Length: 117
Image (cartoon, rainbow, N blue to C red; front, side):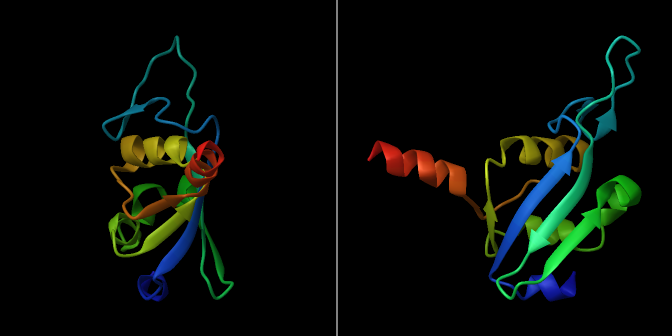
């Protein structure tokens, strides 16, 4: 994590099953036998301009994945996070782990804007 703090820019992507807030509200999983569990954040991938790639197994680590400084990095507006259509990723990060990413540069949003100009 200390290595990532030194980077001015990171590429970030999340993977999960039907990724969104899903079955979580306010960091707590909702238990409803009528609704199947969905939306779990499983993997967080981070790339650096130096070509380094990191895969964080969020499914295994749970909240501890963010309690060792990763939350601070994702929420730091001075570190640019390059993402692509991060809406569901952000939704899952917030509702499951109370992580609100700052300093986002969304490539999909840029593509949409450039096509409309």
